[in-house]
Amino acid sequence: MNQAVENTEKQKTEERNKIDGQQFYNAFAKGAEKVIEKRRSLDEINVFPVADSDTGKNMAQTLRSVAQASEPEESVGSVTQDMAQAALLSSRGNSGIILAQFLNGISKATKDRDRLHLEEFARAMKVAANHAYEATNQPVEGTILTVMREWSRSFSEFVSRKKDLMESLDYSLDTARQSLEDTKNRLKELREADVVDAGAKGFVLFLEGISTFFKEGSTASFSRFRNLEDAGSSHVIEESQGVEGPRYCTEVVLAGEELSTEELRSKAVEFGNSLVIAGGDGQYHVHIHTDNPGELVYELSKTGTVTDQKVDDMKKQHQAAYERESSVAIVTDSTCDLPEAVLDRLPVYTVPLQVNFGQDQYMDKVTIKPNQFYRMLEELEDEEEFPTSSQPSVGDFKNTYSYLLDHYDSILSLHISGKLSGTYETAVKAAEEFEEDRISVIDSQQLSTSLGLVVQELAGELETDPNLEYLTKKAKELSDRSRILVSVRNLKYMIRGGRVSKLKGFLARILNFKPIISVEEGESELHGKPLLRSTNYRQILDMMGEADSEKGIKKYALGHVSAPEEASKLARMIENDLGLEPDYSMDISPLIGSHAGIGAVSVSYLTE
Image (cartoon, rainbow, N blue to C red):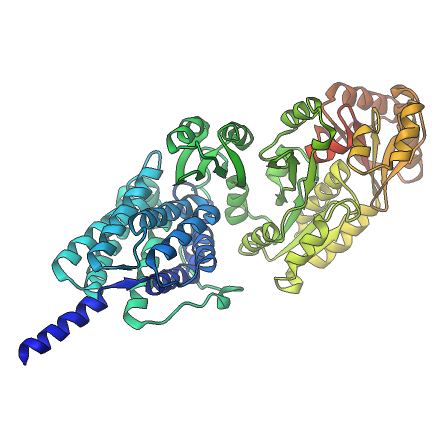
């Protein structure tokens, strides 16, 4: 009788120590829920490798995306395979991509398994930790990697001794917490800030959520985190703990049957640090901190097809988190042409449009720079492959708004004319997801340097810390006072891009016209039909002179499409005739340049 009872209890224990796909999914989701709930507190202690205040956001976004892209199936192997694939595509940030490789390791260790015995589960965790280490080019102790390794070893040891899932989770969690506390003793940056590693803490929170599921059986719910307000941590990172090293956190997803981790590492390693490469079997996710995301993407595209990319400007993130001088942030898009040095010192944050060149996709001004773009444009032979553009996604704007509203009271979002791009409408849709009085979205009816002048002037208004209502009215007023005039060599590029009708283009070509293009009420308009470039410039001078006489020109800027000499020539003519010097001169957005054409020169001015 006693033997029968003993056997029954043994069977119950064995059954309790087996994990099926549904249990694995729900445990993962509960761990994700815990990280999402505390994501703001993770952001606040984010010091290493840079204090860019986004570790919590990146981990939360990665885990939520994986949970929502997977389903609680019966087979563990099916669930982990789906999770690994989702993580590869949706992981964000250094810690996020390390989590992705952790899941990739679990997937490889559980392939074709419907259920896992306790020992198999423990072995999968050790494999996962090893994969995370192998993905990192120069693993640093005192980070999430250390906690992963020490926890997985501890868990495996307790499993072999205790033979019980719950007891092993409890004991190994103590090891993970101690390893987390030790991170501040292993890294100077953490010790000086008196914080633990944010990624490591996120992983411990993840483990705590898993333990909660197996103890209580409660499942996760993500709907309540849409507008989560987390009390977070009282710890404040000092401004002196600023961003050092490469500026851009860059991530590239590539596909190709011949791809390998070794080849990608050899291509990427020279571009920066914090290199992590996750994935395998023809699909990889590369993460690196670099100053040259454009050149990086160009080199990686030689090895395979770039299917996705993301670039975070860590300098601007640090500015938002620790260098705020205003309660209002300004958001614009990459068609706003302002010099980088000007943007760096202003609370202005740019969401890039997409440039599509054949099958390749680039982020305007970020992963494709003007000189590279125009070289590609000149080499274009097939008109069918003429570059096209697409506005940022609603998600792109939501991510930007969400991050900035963690640090600013409100946002003024000012964009390219709605008649020339769908960017404004997309921004409006994204803003609807937030409190109505915190974001104001404006159709500037401008573009390029005329939009740049408006944004620059609005940023100047922030010095007196005005409210959002005032800035919204001011933005509309400044847009009405701004004008852009573009001198084009010919209309070939504008016709290709659909900005000028083919009939007008045909007439202009056969008569060799070099018209001036302006933006009137948000749409392109042709002015005059000069035959010579000098005559074209003279007409611009006359139009500026008339505006200066009637209203007075407060400031102006020059833009050009790979034509700095022509821009300088026009600037000298304006100074000689009107006595005005440009506020700035620059090579404009490749996206705008593709329509104006190589050699085009523009003048934008703002009247008093």
